[in-house]
Length: 447
Ligand code: SF4
Image (cartoon, rainbow, N blue to C red; front, side):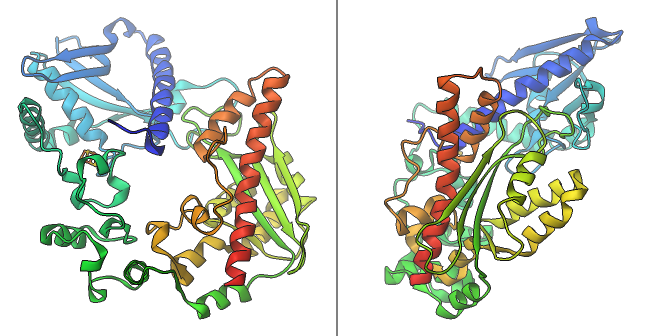
């Protein structure tokens, strides 16, 4: 019943990267004098049903063992969603239940400051963080959660009418949330943007999931717009806020979108682990308010390289005046800042892009709010409502994650028909991103 969603694609990418990092850890440990003390993918299976596969185990001179959990992050993560300490603690408890004495526990992660130059230098790229004490601190809590999980698994049937993520915001729900919570209506309290955990807990405790049961006094100003739209069943338009946004737009308008590639192990010289590298852009230019023939420009790198050629390509197409319009522009501008550091001679041009940027997404958080967007301001949610003739369905490349995967394949492909087809799909996807922005801009202008 587990549905395939965006989460699954991202999880797959993370898993693949985990194996890649593991290969470098193996190579590094293999060069050490004590290499014969290490083993990989050691399974600890206990009588009461714990199963852990430790990435690396070192058998120490005194018979104890050290456990190593390999992660493709650039730091030790211990937040609610990605708690690597809990993960390591589970491994530790499983190993100890199998009669092994665990001396030390490490999270092996990537060094975010490592810059690739030539062959990968594993010793510089990997960080061995000793988390033994932190693991011991969460041992009691993890043990209790294990007992709870075993008790759940021991039941002949489970209650599929509700699950424990009810009190968590939507970004914490897995793809199965709807299956386990059939009584939660749509729209619901989970569509209220940035709702706090305490507020959610209160609504859940009261059994109030439907937005008709929530009053305006109970929510923030931004949430109130979504609530209003849900209760009145129409889009809420703030003309003053719309006018204020449009007053900043200066022609010619440059609708710009980047695609970036980020990988655990940097794929080219000058790149760092997990740092995005722009490899593609699409640009639609609307020269005047009644320009019916948009100008389109695009660039897609044919090989793995830092984006100097891409910047030069943009420089020839983006003039010195006019607004640059992006969606969620903090992403584009973070890339502009990174590229400025990589290529100081281009810093002036890139800074001018930053200075002239207008974020089209802003409109949809305050000036035009529709419950049909599901409490989101993602272009993937807004577009089907306002321009339903444009969609990403049936496209071979249909998301940023797809674009990353596609580029990795593209740069390794021999010239030929298959490569050209993939290239065309990538260009089509990015072009749709900027054309969608033009359409949404025009739709809001009409409103
Ligand atoms: S508690 Fe529910 S939403 Fe949360 S991970 Fe489990 S099934 Fe998914």
